[in-house]
Image (tube, rainbow, N blue to C red):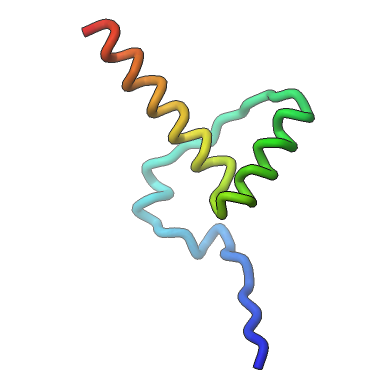
Amino acid sequence: MQVTTMPKSKGAASKSDDTKKVNTSLRLERKTLKALKTRAIEDDTSVQKIMEKLVEGYLKKAGAKTS
């Protein structure tokens, strides 16, 4: 028996998570974005999650320098 799952729609996301997030835009070179998407697939994650972790790490590091 084969089970097929459908991708989650925007409405399927947790409302508490969605209300805390806002959209932004980011311009990357095509090859960089392609590599990032490939890595996200390999790591079973999303580009959004990768970028969020990178930015959070940067802000923590930057905060440590100014303290």
